[in-house]
Image 1 (cartoon, rainbow, N blue to C red):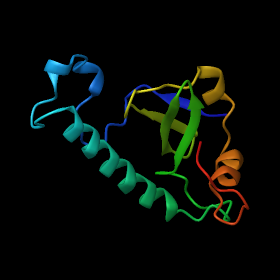
Image 2: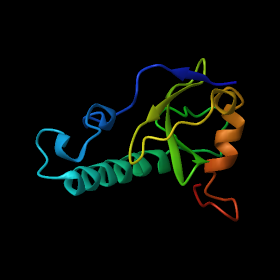
Image 3: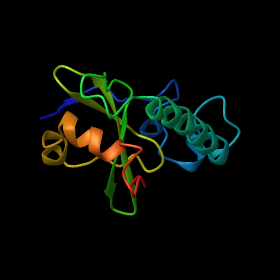
Length: 126
């Protein structure tokens, strides 16, 4: 069962929740599109890190693994921050969706390995 890391995982980007209005674009970005483009680029970097993990080895560390849960009209993204105890941190990109606590609590290392295993027939992320 996973625990929830109380710190958001921002990947070095500003927290979008601190800039809710169109006029309140985070500093260093000319507009919201530039900010979302930076988020997309960071998410691609995180996916590349996640894809390097050996999900077929039950003893391999899952630190850095991405997990996505379908929520509303988007995805609630999480990253594994610790193996023991298994701990996930929310990545508040896009609409900053969060999965219900009960969903996070039910996640196991085995589930992450199955969900992210490159050998499964359908590997699409939510």
